[in-house]
Image (cartoon, rainbow, N blue to C red; front, side, top):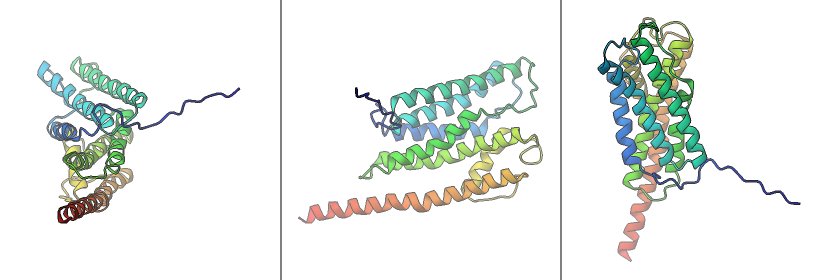
Amino acid sequence: MEVKTRRVVLFDDKSRQLDRFGALLVLVAASIVMLSLVDLYQPVDNLGAELISIAAPTLVGATLLLAARASGLAKCWQIAVDVIVLFSVLALAAATLLRSAATLDPDGPVAAPLLITLLAATTPLVIVRRLVQHRRISRGTMFGAISAYLLLPVAFFYMFLWVNTMEGEPFFGASEPTQVFMYFSLTSLTTIGYGDYTAQSDLGRLLCTAEAMIGQIYLVAFVAMLVGLFAAQWRESRTGDLS
């Protein structure tokens, strides 16, 4: 008797939000602005501060959810991503409420959930996987390419926070608000290197140099591929006009 097995696929490209990279770019930009202005570990002593502290990771979670759908992730895996994001956002919200209730040291950092750190790190990859399937350059293609690039500093932001918590010593040698981690991630990606903040541990240095290298490789390799596709598309249109 032949037993039929159901093959589980990671991507099926059937999502209703497939290629909605314009909306994703807006969310990514808003996430970076929020993480650059809000200290996730700040003591919260009023409702407004609580809401702002909860809004930042919630916005990042919404960004990751849309990225999974826009990249064509299969429905079963979308559900897994939904669960991870919901769990992580609720964990951070609970930590915020505990700080406001003075049951958690307000000056002690709360570890960024490992699951959302891993999810943020893999999201640019799934976006790139979808974009390389595009055979014609559109606004969605360009928005997706920019979104994937801007998600890199968000991913490394969470990695830096994780190292800051797990190593037991301040990432920069002294305690800093989380906005500094976002600032440091952006300057590392762009290789600006102002020198006002530097990683103190070997793992921290490895991560920040890895971010700089990945950012440059992305610009050189992936953007060059997009330019090549655009050139081929332009030549094709010119040939059609001449004929």
